[in-house]
Amino acid sequence: MKLKAFLFVGLIGVMASCGGESSAPAAESKSSAEPVKEEVAVEETSAASDPMENVGIGPIDELEFDEEIDEALAASGKEVFEAKCTACHKTNKRYIGPSPQGIFERRNPAWVMNMILNPDEMVAEDPIAKALLAEYASPMANQNLTEDEARAVVEYFRTIE
Image (cartoon, rainbow, N blue to C red; front, side, top):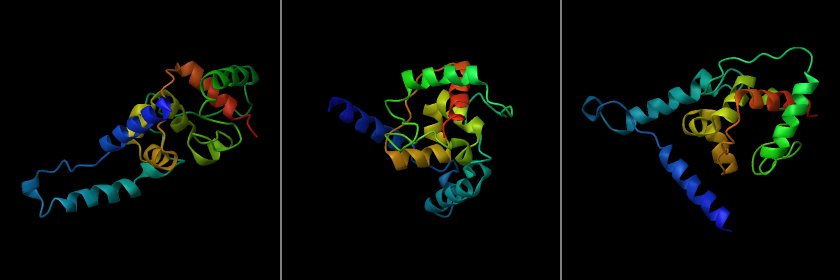
């Protein structure tokens, strides 16, 4: 129960910090509502909201897979996933967070890596991560994985059918 209360309070804090304010000075705009509407419209139509083009916010700019799955890397990723991720993610169904099954049909691999490595900034600034927070009502926990661990988890995601 304490954990649920803590998560709820944290969620409220994250949602409160996601409110948009215009960076334009008030004297330059006709009304304070107009610049906010323009920013939202730009954000919704930007390439950043295209799930297959958006690479997210973090250290990974691009991630292309080899044709063959690296079985050793995937096995290592499965171990990391089972140790750090299964409290919130199930491989083949929605849980506290989304299922990684078929994730690369829905998201750019670099975006997935950045969500694993940099969830706090992603939830605060990335439009897709914000939408996921609204849908699941629970922010992605930062497990402090290394890039190598995150890459192994991503390789494991490729094996989930």
